[in-house]
Image (cartoon, rainbow, N blue to C red; front, side, top):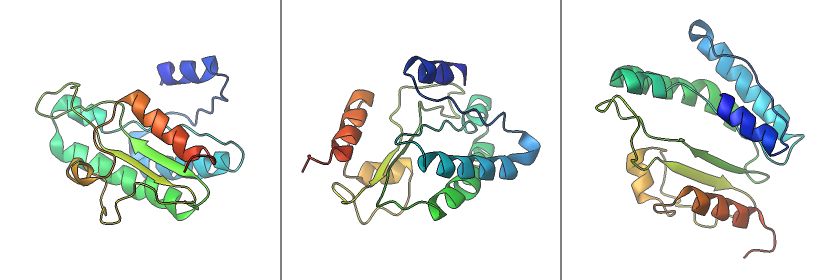
Amino acid sequence: MPVERGLARLLGLRDVFVGPLASTQREQGLRARAAKTLSLLRTYPFVYVHLKGPDEPGHDGDAPRKKEVIEELDRFYFGPFLSGLDLSRVYLMVTADHATPCVLKGHSSDPVPLLLVGGPSARGRNPEARKFSERSGKEGALGLLTGPEIMGRLARRHDPTHD
């Protein structure tokens, strides 16, 4: 991700590139990324992870493959990552940088799901939310937010002086 890596460098963040994700070794590569993320969270107060995968089948109009890729991310990255994470000590935000609907075979301005969880309190969390999807996102407590609003909300949750 040249743009993301360049922005990290401009912001003075340490750029840790794990390497390309080979299509033949997705499970191994995603598990390695989960382990690296957990390791970095022990050292740094902020870790940004950009996972590729669902965008390509979206451009191809291949909905079944897009579903498979999302399920692989869930199973091989988020499964190991979350099993090693203490959510009371960190804030976790999961979202997408854009929508790529298979019917369009391209990017759209459609809203994307947003998951924001963790920290010492459960402010704003919907205890009934059991899935992370477009449908469950419509039921969530956060509503429809812009990028700056999302970052502001994350900053407020991280601020120990904020009630």
